[in-house]
Length: 459
Image 1 (tube, rainbow, N blue to C red):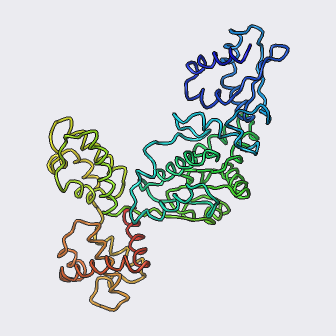
Image 2 (cartoon, one colour):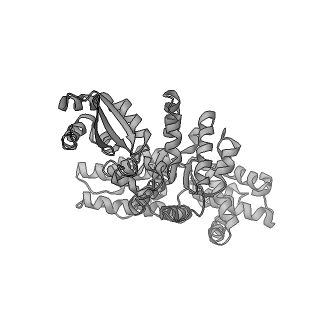
Image 3 (tube, rainbow, N blue to C red):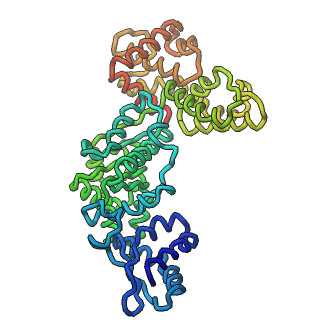
């Protein structure tokens, strides 16, 4: 068995086990030779890769080798030393850091970051629409994506469904992979971390698991709330976290809520997650939703160049679908597809017919009474004082906040809102709404109060 024969055999293996598996597991190996006794020896970057290939592809590999050279009877995998290590792994001076770069560099087509999750090519910084609700998260993600010295560790991104957490995580991974190929980057979900931990326990390969996760330069874990309540997984995550921080390695975490709001999360983990930069992706505002739609329309113009879009459609969608960006983008996709299939321009009538179910589900169902009650609780005042005639500042400002939220979150008219606030005139409501809009840009406390109340009401 010669190295030329091994080269010829590799194309057969690629078609047999699949291109993704081949690029991830077989391509990083180097054929060393055949030892006495018919032992085919392969140099591998890490013990983990050698063990995985032996357990999952050993029989196929041995059968292929035996068919080409009848003297081959067994396989042997050894970690490459400095003289025999494949070229991609030589970039890493630390032996432990070789478990990722070779497979990652070998598989750009399938976007796999061994042994993590595939990256979505649509989720880059170029395609991320920045607005006031997400500008801090975007700036922090860009700083981390530069791959320089760790300035805040961990970076913790949190927010509701469809606000861009996963988009930013993928964008960071793409930038690091393209600009800093020397770094060992691992992106995966908390569920995948738990699955691989359980798998390692079952197969008695905990040392390989520890070596793998402690050898990365950047660890990215999405939806970390899913490990809450899983005691053994939390224990291993805690030790992995500490080991990487001690080595000054970057950790990036995302969740659907702040660390102190994740139920059943161990206090020691919660404390460490709060030790870095914690950034909230706020619910999208009207301007950001409109910007997202405009960005998507530019892409659809290439696919549907002759399709006519009437004025006011995007503004209508940005106003009506306010809670979830994924639903908003899906509605636009459906609208363009439907209009192209029926060969009609996108008019307001067609939009309302095509998206009737989405618009119905997105209709605001928050009542004025619910808003009043929440605002009164938030400011620790009585409901009767909130809607009563007193004009002292302690009651007037919360009253204006409540009016502003009623205007934003309900479909009620200004006169009707005024009637619910002690029979006030609609001009009083207009003044209150305008005053809060001004204060949101000037007073950070008012801005935080409004966003907190909005999230509580829309939850």
